[in-house]
Image (cartoon, rainbow, N blue to C red; front, side, top):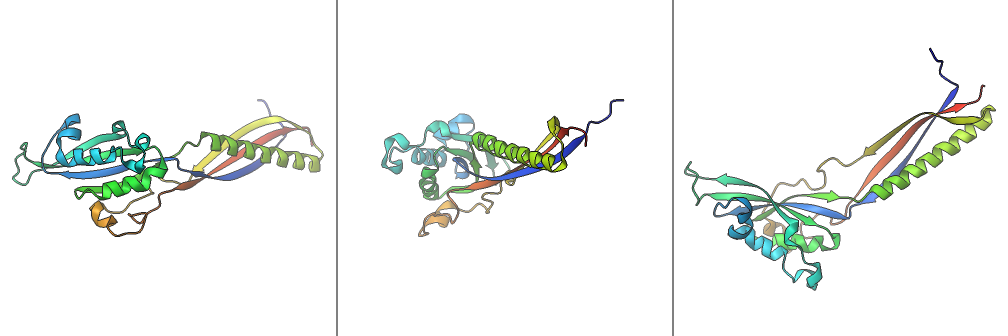
Length: 222
């Protein structure tokens, strides 16, 4: 059985704050009629009113910045029938996901949702383009580990020969949906007369990731 070579274990870590660059808004809309499938976006009156408002060229006063219809997705429909019989006239709650690709639009999108009396904002899911930040953080961690290993090896009077074992751990402090967990309320009631942001919530968000490594360096004999 091959014996384990002489090694020293080095641990290093780095914390990095990463800002969200886009978000998904999850909205429920109370409808007075039941329409299924993609037709709900156009034929369910309350839903179509919200879609039209969100995709209006007037958004931010810049036609090029309006929300694309493709950014709004119907995720599900919940039927509400008081008589116990499901009819075409049954009311329904439509669940929508609205993609906000530019966070400078977020406050205005929230105000548009707030103006719809049948709409309720359920939650916001923040999105990140974090590959570059994670790569940079890893480079910093590896640099710390190498510098630490060289310092310790010098003090022990040995030479670094290479890496014997490497373990990486990444801790992301953000749970799946911690960002906005208030009970669904009529958006109009939340926003009228309130200072911006109208829903009393952050319109910019960041999270912290912690990258740590454990590295066993092979060294010359002690």
